Length: 293
Image (cartoon, rainbow, N blue to C red; front, side, top):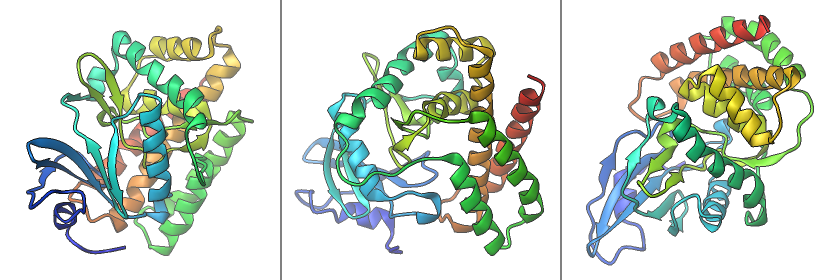
């Protein structure tokens, strides 16, 4: 992994017609993002190398980004180099969790998830990754022990819970998922909604995207049921609800453990300790609710 300054890397990309002045954009907790103007045209630039410990491989992000544009849910990728992606800039509002929660916005988001799951496999090319949160837990736990993380005493219990959740989720029918449905990865351009950031794109369970959307944005129980029934086009059975809530707990545990790792490896200026604490608390509440079902 290169240690070159991300802004300098963005400025030196081969696609520019001359000197440019990348403007840092706030919000990224994995990559460094910039707005670049070249000959009066604005571009969105993402700078980031492979992060094997998180399963982030840029060849997969590139393939997913291209496929997402092909199915009309993400902006056009105009240029790429190792560790850099340049997109057409879209004017719009980055969503916050409270903007995601209303039923009207969920109704705009669901078609993007459906197109991702159903249409992107027709356009993704080359090697692909699989996103399975329970494999991620096991890998993260090993890495956290090697790092002598402050969270090592918690790992045995988390491992037991993860095994319980994996059994509850049961067999899956894989789809191509986004797997990182944070509010900030949606851009509302007014006339349409865009889905951004394909770091974790890969095959996995459709329940993960639905549960991830809910867990990251505090979707209400009534709207969770609406999401499930709209996605699967049938009433939500007790079994489906239990599997969904198991994956919801898994989504929250995965985000917490991602942050535990990031406390050690990330160079981005972000309070990962607070993020870990927040997501662990949310996980514990969701798992307690699940056990009462």
